[in-house]
Image (cartoon, one colour):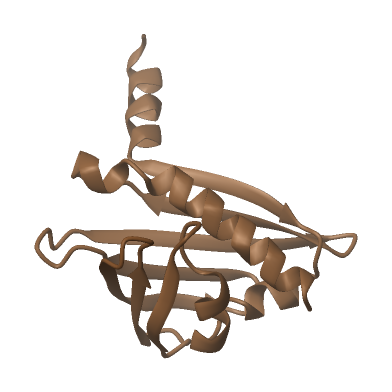
Length: 153
């Protein structure tokens, strides 16, 4: 493996990228990220709920979100928005485990074509393998729930 290929492989391991096409216009999909009211309806993997959520949806704004697992355990996620460019892009940072103090950076882009939205999530991978373990599945299931949410209009 040459040096360039090794660097690309290393970079790929530091970021999860998930793309999904929604049968909904971009503005609607973007709006579903914009408020606690929306996030409570779709955020989190299957079986999780969001009993508490506070969102300042603007560049520099903060958020606090509690995901409650099927076992009743609460997982708090706190962070801030670096960028909010409606309806194209959201960049936010978050700390999922207060003890780890590792900041995760997530970039979400929205592209529209023929009334459908292609959404891409790019997120840094936590150093702790236990935290990283469910990252792809969690996002995949969350986006499935988002698709159902925007289908209701």
